[in-house]
Length: 476
Ligand SMILES: [Zn+2]
View 1 (cartoon, rainbow, N blue to C red):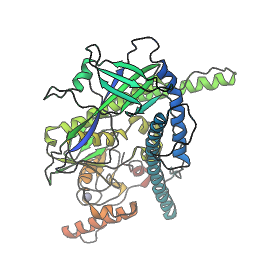
View 2 (view 1 turned 45 degrees about the horizontal axis):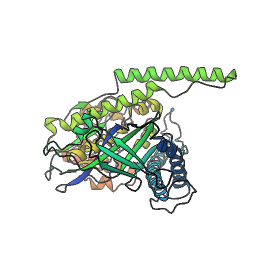
View 3 (view 1 turned 90 degrees about the vertical axis):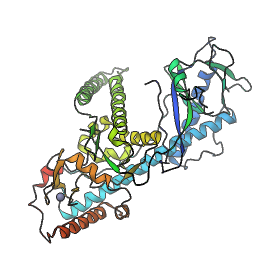
View 4 (view 1 turned 180 degrees about the vertical axis):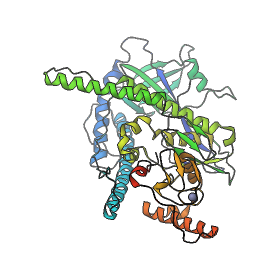
C-alpha cells in the first residue's frame, strides 16, 4: 500500500445525501537531515514535550475531565504555544481513554448483573467465575509523538526543486526556529496528487511528528469530501464479526480468518514469551541485574499482520460486486469490552484483534460513502432468524446454529448476520435497558411467530445439557 490511512474516531457516520469530509493521512515521511545537528533542537524538545503532555494526560485521566482549552498549570521551559499544543493532545488521549474505560465498566456491570441473576436462579455453570473489575492504568506516553498545529510547526511548499516542503519548527530557544526540508517519495507524491486534475491536494495545517529509534517521521493529512452514494431504503447487509471468520455477511459470504496460519503463529509467539518469562524468573532468582526484555518483536509483527488481514477482509467485503448499493449493519461492540466477552480465551481474543474489525468497517463506510450502522448485538448469535426463538441451546457448538423449535439450521455466523441485518432502526430493541429486556422482546416475537404458524403453546424441543451448550453461548 503506498498510502497509509489513519483512522479518526469520527462520531459522524454517513447520512444520505450530505457530503462530509474524511481525513486521510500520508505517513512515514522521513525528515532528512541536511546539515548534521539540525534536528538536535527537535531532539532536545521531544522529552520536555513528552513529560508535559504526560502530566496533562495524568491530570485529565485522574482528577479533571479532559479540557482542550484548559489554562496552563505546570511549569515548563516550552513556549506558551507549545504548552497549548501539549494540553490539546493530552485532552484527546485522555478523552478516548475515558470513553473506552466507561464502555468496559458498563460491560462489566452487565456481566456482573447477569452472573448474579444466574446465581440467584441456580443456573450458574460449574466453570463460571464472578466477573472482576480491574482498575485501568493511566496511559503512559513512551515514544515522542507530537500533534502540532500551525502555531508551532509551519508547513510551506518549497520553491526549489530539490525539496517539496519546508517545515518551520519552533524550539526551546525563543525566536530560533529550525527549518527542516521535506522530501517526498514518489508514492507520497502520488497519494497527495488528485488523480483527476493532477493538482496537489490541499494539505491540513496540522502535522504529526514521531520519533522512533532516533529518527523523525512526519505525517501529513488532507481532507477529502465523500458523498454518500446511498439511496433511501437500500437493502441492509448484516455483518457478524468473529475469529473463525473475521467477517460473515447475511448474503452468505465470509472474509478472512484468524484460524490457520495466524493461529499457529499466535501459539508459537505465546510459547516463546512463556519461555522468556521462565528464563527471566530463573535469572532473577540468581540475582542477575540486566534481565532480557519481555516485549516480543514477533508479537508486534503478528499484530500488524493480523490487522492487515482484517483490513483486507473488510475491504473485500465492501468491494464485493454483490454489495454495491447496499447499506451495512454490524455489531456495536467496543474494543475494551471484548476482553470480558470470552474470558476463557482471553489471550486468543486479544491476539485476533477483533476490536479492529468494527473500526475498519466504520472507516470503509466513511471513505466509500456507504451507510454502516452499529446495531445491538445481544443474543444475535442465539436468536433464530426464522422464528426468533432465543436460547443458548440453539448453539450446539461454535459454528452450528440449530433452532430447537422450528428446526432451522445454518452456519452460526450466518444466522447472526441475518439477525443483525434486521436490527437497523429496531426501536423496541433499542428501548431495552438490559439484556433480559432484550431477550423478553425476542421471545415475544417468537410467540407472535408461533401464533402466525398456528402452533399455539407448544414447548420447545427437549433441552440439551447446559454445560456443553454454554461453551458456545458467547457470540465470538
Ligand atoms: Zn427457529
